[in-house]
Image (cartoon, rainbow, N blue to C red; front, top):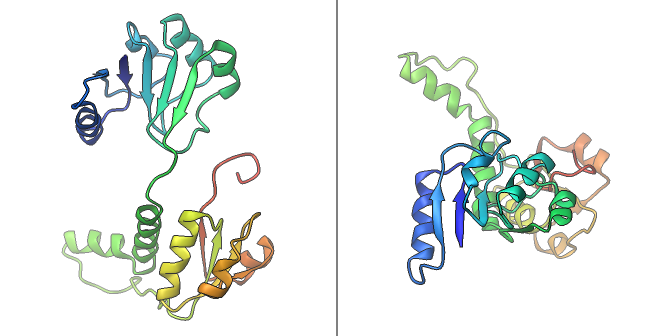
Length: 214
C-alpha cells in the first residue's frame, strides 16, 4: 500500500521505515505539512494516509481524500477526536489507531512537568541563560504530604498515582469506573469530582477529550 505520512518528523520516518524494512509491504511518502484541506492533495496516488494528533481529518478533508482514492486513515496516536468518524463510515474509509502508549512513559512525563512547574525550572533556566542568578520568585514547595488529585485512574492515571505515592503524597481520585485495587495498594481515596478539586494541592488530568470531559 502507498501511504502519505503527514506532519512527519525524523523519528517518525526512522520508526516507520524500520518497522517496514523486513517485509517492505508499504511505500511511504513523507510530508512535513499537517493534513488539512490545503494539503490533502499531497495524498494523490496513495491508498492510505498516516496522521498525528494535530492533523485535521474532518468531513471536508475526508471527502477530498475519498476523491483521491484513499481508503484507510491510520493514526499514529491513541486519540481520535480529530477524526470525523461519521463521515469516514459514510465514505467507507477505515480508521485505525494506536491502541495505547506506554502508560509509564506518559505518567513519568506528567511527573516531570509537575516538578518543572513546582520548582520553577523553566524560569530558572531562562534566568541563568541571561546571567541572572537571583532566587526571587523561584521558591517552590515540597510535594511530600501534599494532596494530589488524579482525575481518571486508568492505566496512565494509576501509574501516575503510584509515582506520587512514592513521593509521600496523599492521593484523591475521581473516575467513572474506580479501580478499587488502588485504594488498598496506595491508599487512594475516591471522592466526587468537586471534592477532589476543592481538596487537592495538585490536580493531574488523565482522561480522554470528549464532550463529557471538555
